[in-house]
Length: 539
Image (cartoon, rainbow, N blue to C red; front, top):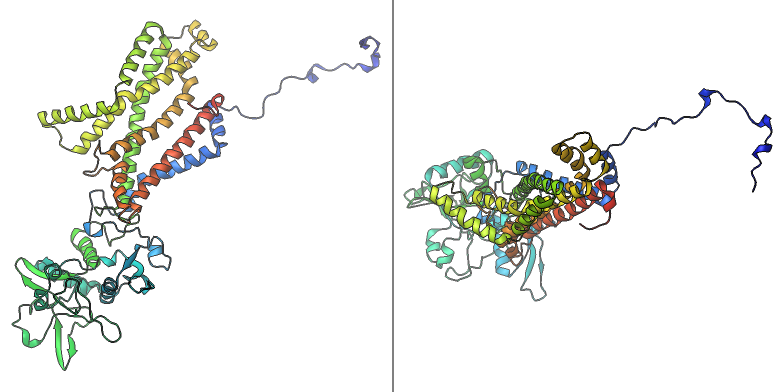
């Protein structure tokens, strides 16, 4: 079509002023920096955000949880081994979850013994007193309170001073620790395994039987068999070792006579007593040790050694995060320096440095760890250095992870330098007289920081997983002193599954699963945010 602009009437044209001529307008929005843009892209990735939140929670748990528990890593109490988790909010409710109880299947005699314990100490050893009986009447099923259910254990021998101190504690607090003992004449007729069982306080059908069956009255109540004496029995062996019980401290009236319970028996080395372990535990920690522990309460339960799982897991997580972060930081520094030199200068220097990395990286890490353990241990013995096995093992782990850990970082950095070193802005900087160091770390390195940072983020969970694997397999032992490892806890917890205490393995395993999954989501989100061109790719 022929243009007809020559035929446009003159009146269609209009002169304009210079001020009316349009120019480029200034943007109303503020410029966005590289990191601001990356942060915005990261926030759009919901999976990465959730991963970051979970990681933050795990880190806060590792940092602060040890401050909110009175227990320490070295602490243990074999009496409370495999004790179920308990939260106070559930312990005093009708909810059968996280209440410190476990399902117990028992025959009638075992059930009767638990009833006897519940009757004596006044605690719901059988939760709410509820139970079910099998159709044939041979099996009783109920929720058993594992904290008060430990009962009395064996007879304890304490000093006269401690005996008096416990009496004073009972009078001051109203909590009963010591209970009347069984007549020694009856105990002498029992089989050896029953003589020292402090849970037996009742009359039994046959003293010489292997399994002692409690007697009950017509109302089904257990009949106590406490050692009693009268005022006329002052010459008795136990006359001077009676405790003033909270109830009945003025004596018990029977058949017109006043009887007093014997709360101890004088033996070589002190006084033999029946101490209810839950209250004795409280007394010992609050009055004797004064270590901040008020009563036994394990939120995550205990392992086979009676260690608090919450404390060990928090300290193990703290060690893992700190150790992995330190190693990642050192590997980052060494790897960036090595990779930048190799990638920037190239040529024969790059060839030599790459061959060195390949040779070093081909050495199996297991051999490195074994040699380090052997030679470092011999060196310590030879020079008389520190003998703390944990410090030695941590040092072995650090050297082993550092020996080859920086190679991957160096390779990533080298790749970025090869990618950017011939770009126009680098040539311009060199033309303007910029030195090699300035070009390397002022112009090239910032442009490759996204990929490098992503590598660091993914290296931390990899190191934690490797450290956990080594401690799980027992190649590195971190189960002494004030340091422990998540891998060590999982190794111990695997035996608890068959013992009906799966929680001992569950909590460390769930921590490891959450950490690995969250770090992978977080690392992938960082990769997509810092380098959108790699979105969806696998590195």
